[in-house]
Length: 115
Length: 115
Image 1 (spheres, rainbow over the protein chains, first blue to last red):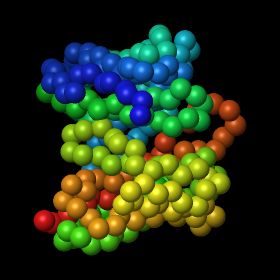
Image 2 (image 1 turned 90 degrees about the vertical axis):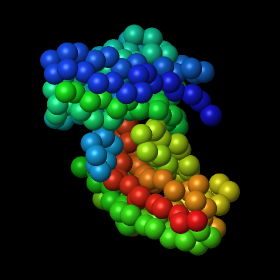
Image 3 (image 1 turned 180 degrees about the vertical axis):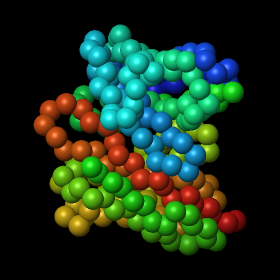
Image 4 (image 1 turned 120 degrees about the vertical axis):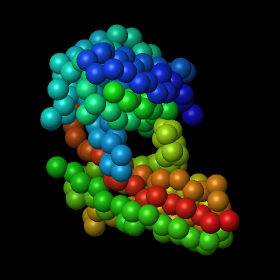
């Protein structure tokens, strides 16, 4: 199956700093990438959809100025959590596909802890 | 708004038993349904994907069925093994025109197989 690499696996940062998470498709061109967030014992919740070369589409309730998404190439999308606060501590995971309705492949996730 | 519910939330059984995990969704206009496995602190592994036109899919000891009209899916695990211990997630993909849609996940069933 296709491989999606996500880094870092975990990150601890101080409140007020920004954190960048990378999601790469290693063996296919990902025209679309999705970013999810999962709080403990909760469902994975879709945050935003990014298409290569265009602005991301954010789900209702997700602050686009706080969660900056860049999908500059067909193999890389980044999520930057700006001015992180303890309530942003969560498990973030990306997924990618090569077509509008193709099977989705997931990264290994990033556990963010904001002190 | 699509809602996905998984029952039971947790399950602990002895090794060798056959299991059924349940998933229900409120909006039957889905494109497909996927079952995933999530191990602690890790990403998702896709187990089975059922297109909306299909009734079931099988892979090894796993069998997933889909009844779109009633908004239900089941994941059947035969002859369970300790290595099957994980959280099992059900997710549906919306059926909308064009574009690429993210998945709506249930909260998962936390499965423990006792040796």
